[in-house]
Image 1 (cartoon, rainbow, N blue to C red):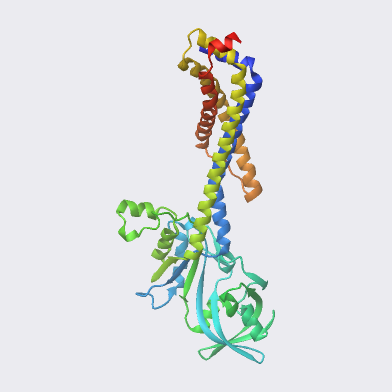
Image 2 (image 1 turned 135 degrees about the horizontal axis):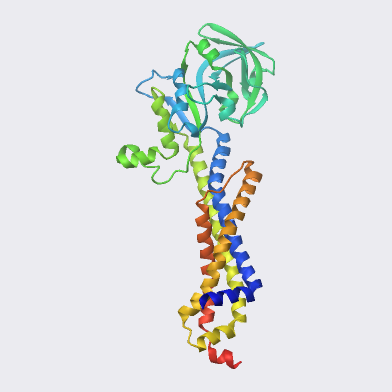
Length: 409
């Protein structure tokens, strides 16, 4: 009997059934697409934020290392547990030199570094590291050094020395001199404008510190810090430490890097890490809010359609009550209709949401994405939730129908 009633209901009211189906489908599709790209958005935004600078600083520890890090340990950074989260790193060696350009002289900081160096690690894919990788925000006039005698000069220092692209600058340190040709002038608005940049091996030789480093900046994709991530690892239990170590917090990635760099102390650059974490948290909150708003709008649309349908079916409901139907039986009929529609709407919504997520990812991030299978049950649950929420008010109205008044006309 119930099956026959449901069948007749679908056949007699195709327009109202279609409107309910469309509302549920759109809600499930939007929920699927938003949740599908939520993880992708966080990952892509984290990668985009890496262009604003490194978020981990490696310095010599006070206990060992003699005040320097070892260049020979650098390849080990790409072998740590979170190696695939490390998007780049670059070493630095600082020293004071006397610079001469024509008749002008300046005492300045010379910085040896990698600019764009291919790193080969046994068992790993080749990768490029250096300033171009972790500091793409540099505003550079000219280019990066390619040879050992080429250099980049900070804009402020270049003005004081009166140098332009192609100028000759002689550096004096420890009684040794080294001529450089200026191939780039960098503007950053920061301390880099006061420095003289040259290839790492050249600066090591000039300063007499072969194989030594002053610091290493590491850029890594991390997850936002939460209360657990901010706990002191030393005070954690074994289980907590394993969970912390296996979560890509900036602190746990820093710990990874510190373990392979002898005599080092790694610490997050909190100014960058905290800002990134706050931004990603807010972004996830916005995506979740939009999903809830979309589902809420779908539930309202379902409720409106069912209320209109309920007004048309008042005589039918009154007749069922008159012949003895109770609330449970009436609920079974109308909820059965809605749940059948939501089942179809959830499946179609998942398929549409998958395509919508791919379209958004391609247009915004220029990358393909396929919604994970766990979003199918999520789409089904969303469709059922929209259907039930939208049915509440119409069903209550059905319970209030008085057969005598309706059938009497």
